[in-house]
Length: 301
Image (tube, rainbow, N blue to C red; front, side, top):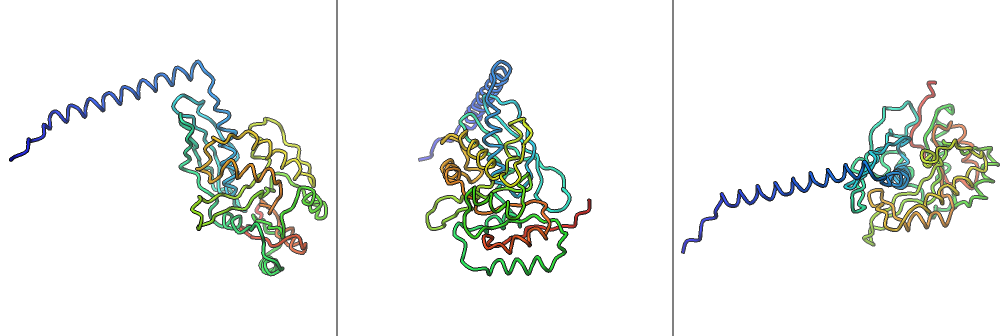
């Protein structure tokens, strides 16, 4: 028995109707979104404060120094960061990194990923429980001794043990170090357990410049005691977060950040535009496990 031939004309008309209704609904929602944007104040500033800062925390290998919002709306709010790879030499021009939060609180950041390249590898090399011994420091010393000591460097200083704020302040005073914008603090190393099935988590790297854009205040760096101010700012930012914030795109989580803020210890430093000679001196301190060089360049200025 022959089956009935499908009515292709009817199917085509039905498809056209579905597409027309979908388009009409989209246009209606867009119109409502535009009207609401004109008359209501959406909290796009929170999108910038939470997700813009989360992007900086999760991408310390990039200089994400400026951002702007589209003003927010019913369907979605976007926040665009401008930045470039963190290199020791001259900049290569800025790139846009767009973060979009939709109506349901889901965030996508297609242009952002975790730390990558040599600095990302250096950050990922920091261990929660470093191996005992001075072998890594000796290897780093030989590498640095073979280079001109006046070179600018981007590097990671890994500590032999996690440092409390008081210990880090004493470390700064011993070496006459200032915090400023050239030092970021690793409050938690990256984490991945391939046997658990849990998603990987980025290292938690913090610099006070990350919050400056939204404070509208000139930062007053405290030199040797800068770790105290940095931890205070980090804990203040973590206090803005809700458990429902979607941080998956940044390979972060509310619990991961809250735990790092509560513990408040520093596993290492990400240093930007330091001289090799200054890094070399730190290797003589037993509290320094090693120095991971990420990039070096001559100071052409």
